[in-house]
Length: 365
Image 1 (spheres, one colour):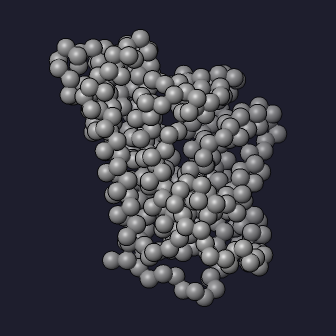
Image 2 (image 1 turned 90 degrees about the vertical axis):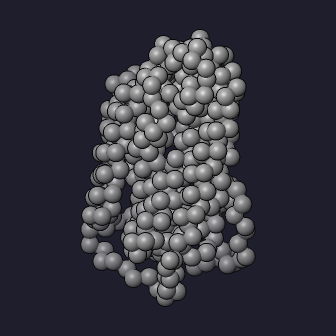
Image 3 (image 1 turned 30 degrees about the horizontal axis):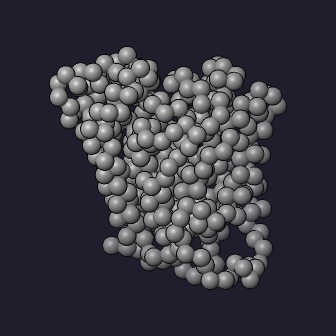
């Protein structure tokens, strides 16, 4: 069952008490220009989705810059390095589009999108330390420039700043969702650490890790759009399911790219997962489909880490059809994500969410 689209009447405004000044000011909207009332451009690609919420994303980026500020110089330097280092802002973008698809007409999605980006950025800082990575988005990681201690502590700063901003929104449900999500992300990091160098990691264990490390934040981003709009439980769960399955599709596609892309395109070193001893889906499938002797070689490659066995691993992944298998799994999750959107009324925003499901599996970086 779907749900009725929101009324075309004026939005009900919540009391201003407890709300951040930023959100109050943002409600003073300028009149629509002639361009805004023109026939919308079909949303067929990622750039169209970006254009669809460009004004909101500009406000998110401005808020991110404002709330990154600290009187501790090193915090500013490290945070600016990673936040200003490019990236697609996919998770805040997802939240902005989901809020529109849910029919939300306020401005709290701006602050929430910034919170989601801070949480994601904090995980990246911590990830790069744990993984001993030296390249992200085509340039040196923060830990490669300032060291592990600074990266971990600035990651903590971003987490705490995110929680400060949550409190300003004064919505207990929002805080509970994001607190639970952050906790599950941390659990995912620990689970992945336990799997490093473990050649017996199977597909179920792999999926458990990526659900917590990646998919739960996607799900929170989309669920919160429904929460802001106060949608019925069925519609809220549909948006959350869309985000969760999109997160699975995105991460599996990302793990495929680690074996087929190049550093110039992907922004990180090829074979990083293998070098770090991470058993991802292409390698897990190759082990399961290889003869015992070949499987033993692949398992040793995981146990030993490094890139010495990369050529052999790539050959085995190709011979066993592991890349096609992994792509099929990503496509299945993307289809499931699109199916979940059927609970929402048709709109440009829903089209944008469908486009993001395609982008997650067809991207090259």
